[in-house]
Amino acid sequence: MKKKISIGSWAYVFGPYWENPIPFEKVVQRLAELKFDGVEIIGFKPHPHPDDYASNSHRQDLRALISGVGLGISGYAPDFTAHSLIRSDDHSGYLKTFEKNLNFARDLEISALRVDTIDPPTVLKDVKADQALRRIVPTWRKCAEMAQQAGVLLAWEFEPGFAFNKPSDVVRLVDEVGHLNFKILFDTSHAHMCAVVGARHQGQPETLKGGVIEMIQKLKGKIGHIHLIDSDGTLHNNETSTHRPFGEGLLDFDAIMPVLNQSGCTSPWWAIDLCFWPGSWEVTPACKQFMDKLNDKYGAAAQRTSN
Image (cartoon, rainbow, N blue to C red; front, side):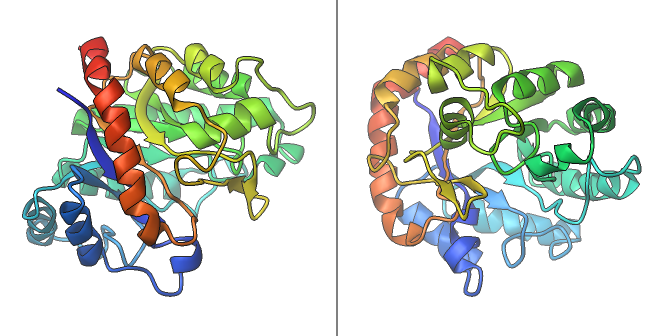
């Protein structure tokens, strides 16, 4: 049995689509036509947001919209941008937003919920790393426990745009949270920028000789969800990784995928991530074809490894 393939709906909301996002209903219809297995939902309006689907009946209508065209939901990425985990000790607002979004994920039977450290890496110029960790770790440990009770995996996506983006930082933070329901969301483009380029590292850059593959190995047993996309070694708007379509970047997926298959990740999903890419709507079919080939070569082996 091969992997199930999805794509993040943020590809049609963020970046050049911000002023004119593609309606979610149109997205799921096209993904069904392209024979995707699912969609990964971004919790930014006008795409599905818990405030717009506040009642259980509305949420069941949303589930029916998605399942009605034969799709599942691989994950959910809520909007936490109104909060800070590092600049303040008071996380009551964050926890309230988290609980609201967790309930949304639970009601839609979504198996993974994404979080990030919210603040840019430059925040560590103002707040010492140890203090920042003392703020983040207990809150995420509490969130992981809440999510476990709801049957949802809590998945942290590290990337150049947010604090704690050095390889050793990533390992340290996930280890310090130390909860079985807290895992890494591993994005191949972010991994290249963090482990090979050292993008937006504070202080002395920290890179790995083995690049993305060594990063995977360092996180063995800690990866819970996977985003796949290429990288050309550049940043988008000097902030986060450029998510370049497959085959237009530097990544050797024939080298990466067997190692990912040995990472211990048990998710049945591989998600395409075209965040901020101009023309993501137009390149989606080609990206799906690339993923299908990867799935043919490595998907069944991934399932055998994780079972």
